[in-house]
Image (cartoon, rainbow, N blue to C red; front, side, top):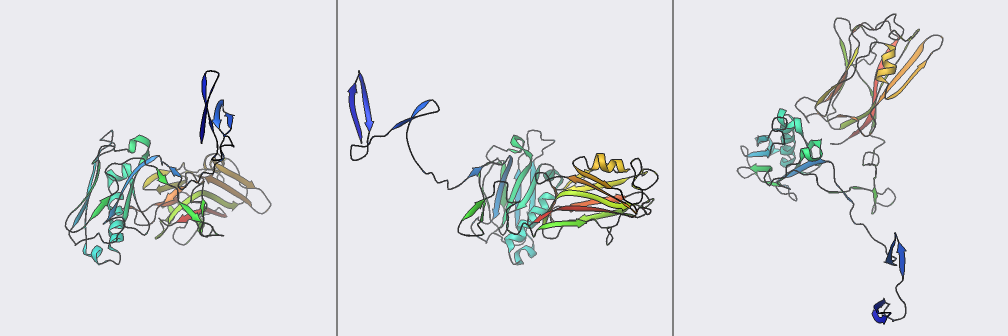
Length: 371
């Protein structure tokens, strides 16, 4: 109820309750007089905007599982060129429905996976974009590898998916933009009717995260000890992409034992290595090569420059440990098999004769998640 009165040449309005007695107070807040309130606000969705532009489409409709037509039908995917057409060329790729797609238990999932493999295997596409799936759904998600405006395609029609025959597709948008998205919750362990907001991301709170932790040695097939003779014929120790999971490695460790480990030499050998131990990584379809290791100094000052180094000297044998940390923010990502034409991997090559070293290993630590 509002009651008005005239006071000192001004009209004064008082807001009261329905009984006409209790007045609304005014508080001074941040230099302004504001109505005193006591309210509880319920936030039904928390939105944020990723820094990478994206678009997606469904085989069929988003709410059905009946989009794949007949063998020979085609699905054409088009994305406009970027600001520099040479660096960011237009994408125009077509997938042809196969008989095996139509006969699959879940045709939309089969077509989705084949389209993702086709896209990620294309040289022009993988320069700028990465295709992913939406688990359990016939949906292809396409995201820019470049942050902010570089990935935006803002003109209607810059993103198009065109089927032929009886095959149907549905695009969510006809442009590629950075869009606000809802925040996913995980169910509370104590009360599954409630959700838990993971501020640091689902990586740290996903159910089964502890059981998905992985710690493995690189192998030359069956052997994990790198104290081998790689002179003349290098010996490669690798970890391959997993058939099911995406692998996220947050740390690489070099560790081993030898007698009389010294700086200036490689471990207990009497000289540095001639060719060195070489790290080659293919992560998210991009090649990365670390500086080679020639000496104990390289393990400490180069390899372990972001991580830690420890050298234990004792009678009967010394032990060295060097760690290279990537952390949860920028881990080494090894995508599941079939994501790209050539699968991701981590490889360490021994290019010298290390057979005099007592033992030497490369161990990688991280976790795995379903794509």
